[in-house]
Image (tube, rainbow, N blue to C red; front, side, top):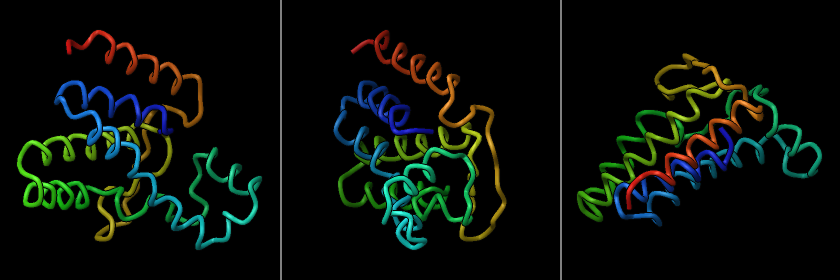
Length: 149
């Protein structure tokens, strides 16, 4: 899924938990691990090459989703947050992180949920950068708007 969808889900979780900053930051910033393989394969040197690689659902090198995009990372960040900041922050971080992973799972891009233990791939049903993803985004925005404060 693209950043707008992660942002919208972060806003929903933030509204539901009362912790917008933590929910949005967790939901959106998890994609920072995409830059590691992009840099490793030299795709950040040229904007056209960079752009063409991020708008395609294919994972040319098999490492598009990094260390933060697996189930183990959800448990680790939630547990880490619990011990550092307490149960409320851990709940928000856990929901946001799992929500991010879930959105990536329903996208038709490769998800390797059990890395580093397995390279088993899953693909979802919503085409990446498609009108269906835009409709999904609008649905998330609608949920955000009707959710009581």
